[in-house]
Length: 412
Image (cartoon, rainbow, N blue to C red; front, side, top):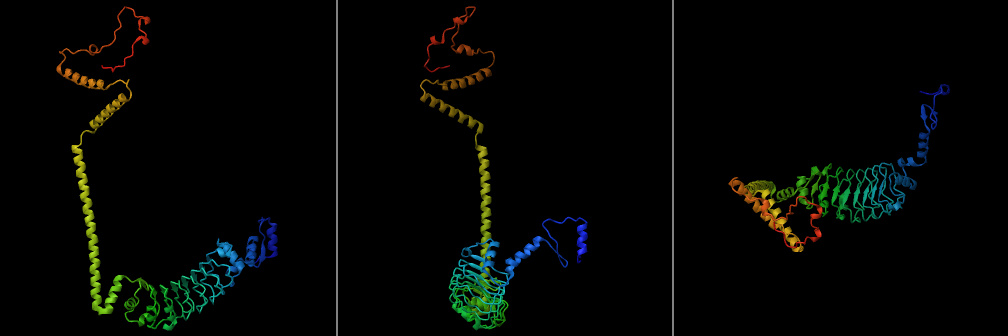
């Protein structure tokens, strides 16, 4: 819908309130606010250059600021420049501390200007337009190189990379054994991905066999798989250190069977396979037997523990009586320690003993009957008796100071 000037006047006439911070700009059918305009101006000044074709110093500075990296170039160890549409590698001279550089999914045609990245360990430059491996000699510490999905026809210029262990070069234009011949000069490579190229010559096995540290190999998507008889067995036998081939591991059983097949044919492979299966079954049976023995030991221990608990309950004395005896013994030992430490302390052990004997005698008397004469407790205790004078006055009581102190042990 196209707005006319009359329509704008009508809107103003109807007293329609417009935002204070916004201004209506009529460009055909577009209505743009001040915020959108400012954003467009800002993009035109350089922020939108992330989708441009050149790597400028200003872009790198804004890019580091946006991704919360260091503004000082040499402090950065990682730089993410993927999915930007760059066609040329440039202006990375100041980023000397880089250890990982992401450049995939761009339009880069040539590997260049990486002479100052001496600390670089990982270079991801897949999905570009590169057709030649070059200018990598300065990257002595490079450990991982991913150059898949490019247009490389020959592997070269990698012999000086003594720490290179992983090379991913799938989905390229490698065709013959001569294109891989340079790999024989790269003994440090242990992971090699050659999948989905145009390899068809079985002679590549001779080159791969010279890579003494090769442990992971991927040749899927190449015609050479069909041209090598007994492909998997042959590669396992030829490559002694191989632990992973294509999409699955190489187990010790697979290697033993492949080596038996190479030495004695199919019959030897059958015998080796049966031997390994017998060993595996015996290991499983040993594990089951060990588990059963553990279970039996546990059951016996539980039964012995239950019997021991039952025996303790039957032969154990009354815990209340044991506690009483322990408390009496403790009290007696405490009394003895007090008497030993304080000469003037009163010995109550005799009283406790006599009290116990008295309790026993009272029980005997109560059992004998009421007719027997039972001496009164007051007759057995010598107590001072105040003479009866009819009326007892307070002055008749003796002074406490006149009563001599008794230092002897009181016996009741």
